[in-house]
Length: 251
Image 1 (cartoon, rainbow, N blue to C red):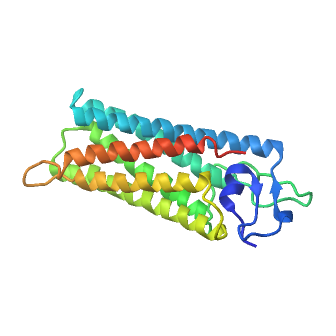
Image 2 (image 1 turned 135 degrees about the horizontal axis):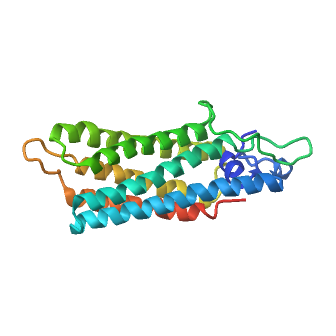
Image 3 (image 1 turned 90 degrees about the vertical axis):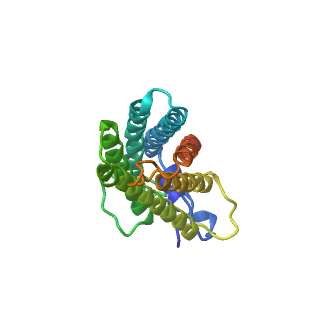
């Protein structure tokens, strides 16, 4: 029987993903629901704050307010929140219920700060997201220092940023694959589906921003700084919106 793992991980509800009988449904106990709610709240709030700060930073950069250091500082703080949300997403997978007990009640396992489960799409998606935020954070930290040569910008800022964007897209693709696999055809798109879609749109916009921000060695100018700023603003807004929706995807 295929299981809807996202519903189990987010809402503490064990439900077959293949249209199985109603008897295959089970719900978490009170303590498990509270744990899932707390982890989800941390992840969702971190993405809302991080996305909002990135949108603000892009607006500051586009309007030339406060100079590049101010925008870089805002991006850096936003990156800390993004990394927090990424790690909280890993914790959601590591501490998600796996099955119902003999009494038909879903319970979470012992608390874990990390897990290694490469065979699970949700684990791979969460880890790709978290590692992507680390690459992004490294890029933001170096950019905050400033006064870099073009070669240093390419190696220490642009390259880690693009790697992070690729990992975001991989994470979103794995999340979409999980939902397609675990859910029967014909089931209407629910909140979780839209959260994944909006996040993937944000990842695509971040990739567009990263490409547009490439600095041409011969001139020292970005390919299209306006596109980079507006794509960053729009992508970050998508992440913030998805985080706000995620606040309601709880037990």
